[in-house]
Amino acid sequence: MTAEAKTVTPPLTERQEARRRRILHASAQLASRGGFDAVQMREVAESSNVALGTLYRYFPSKVHLLVATMQDQLQHMHTTLRKRPPAGEEPAARVAETLMRAFRALQREPHLADAMVRALTFADRSVSPEVDTVSRLTTAIILDAMGLDAPPTAEQLSAVRVIEHTWHSALITWLSGRASIAQVKIDIETVCKLIDLTGAGSRAGADQGTRSGKA
Image 1 (cartoon, rainbow, N blue to C red):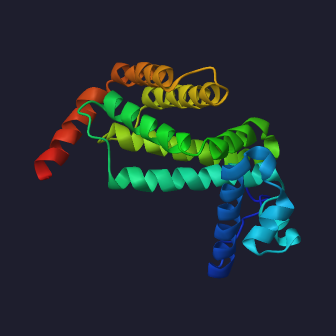
Image 2 (cartoon, rainbow, N blue to C red; image 1 turned 180 degrees about the vertical axis):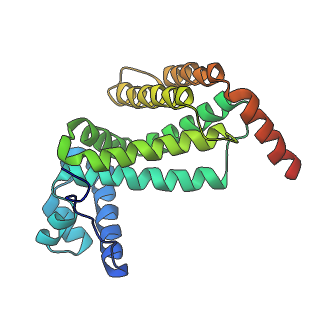
């Protein structure tokens, strides 16, 4: 498909955005109470006060809906983390602290976390745009924590991808009962040391010092 052939989705109106917010809130509430199986499209429609047909126009399936719910949760986390950034002096320490804070936020809602992760696991190509958005948000959270004063290099982006994969895998193993929080913390801290190998320390450290001096 060429760029010209792709359909450009117009931005949502204020009313449509409010409706979408209600749908995502209902999805999160149902998932928090009963996990993946508790999120039934008819119940989501009823809880959000929208017609079932309207719900399907916004989200063609439960997997689409729950991946979008994860996107919404990550956006909220990103906003919170920007208001209260990590305090570590080194980039690796800041990223590890950030990811553990995100992990603990998910830990407080284990049924919701399980539902969202299962949706990501079940996602096929039709859900690729939503999955890509989740990945971009995770990348943005990590890069913010690194505090680079220049665009990331290819090597740094590669390290970020490995960190993302490890964080996602750690979340799955914890949800399945195969890893403790202590084990997750060790794995996250270990993989974040890759950042030190990319030369991020000197640039990020200088940036951190500049920000501290301004403060």
